[in-house]
Structure formats: structure tokens, C-alpha cells
Length: 145
Image (cartoon, rainbow, N blue to C red):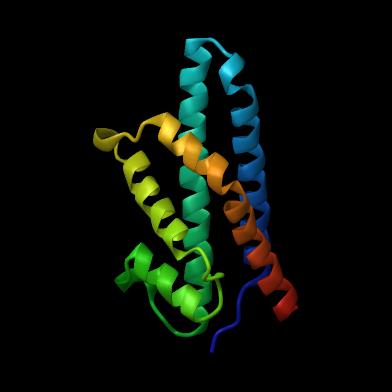
């Protein structure tokens, strides 16, 4: 069994928190901006959302390597399910992980651009869940230190 790279996990956790802060800032100022600025904020929000999902994927990859599972042959959803099964992610919100994955796919492909308001609403409604994922990583770090 491989060991988790604590420094990498700390990097992921810190970046997740930074992304949440950036997304919160966009939510706070968005409505008070002109249309040009709103357009830029929307793109920044999408980018932050994608970064969050990519960091979550990096975390899952790190975790699954410890139990000798290669993520290169797994879908993102399969990785989520395995990480939940192995206790690396909390299981109570599996549908949110899958929705996050779908939003990532929709936001990263220009031809299926998800309406910003839907992405924003998902974030507002599930912010605590997204914060909790980072908190779970912090628990894993404490457990292995």
C-alpha cells in the first residue's frame, strides 16, 4: 500500500479553500457590475469551478493510488464511487459529486455551455458541501500525520 503525499494533500486543500473564496467574492459583487464586467466574472467563475473539480480529481487520484488502483482506466464517477467506498470522501452526498462532474463537463466544452445562472445557483445551494470536501481532506491529513 502506498502512502498519501501529505504536502500534495495540503496543497489541494489550500487551493480548494482559495477557490471557494474566489467564487464567494464573485457571488458577492456580480449583481452590482455592468454587463462587460459580469461577462468576465462569469468566465472567472466557470474557471474556478473547473479548477475545483480538477483538484478534487487530483485528490481522488492520490487516494486511489494508495490502494493500488489506477485512475487512468476509471471514469470520474467511478473514481468518486471508489473514494466514497474506501472512506476518502463522505458518502452522504453522492448525487452532488455526480452533478459536479456533469457541470464540469458542461462548462469545459464550449459547444454545451451551461447557463451561468444554473452554475451559480448550484454553487449557492451546495456551497457547504463544496467546503465540506476540503474539510474532509483536512481530516484525512490529520489522520495520517
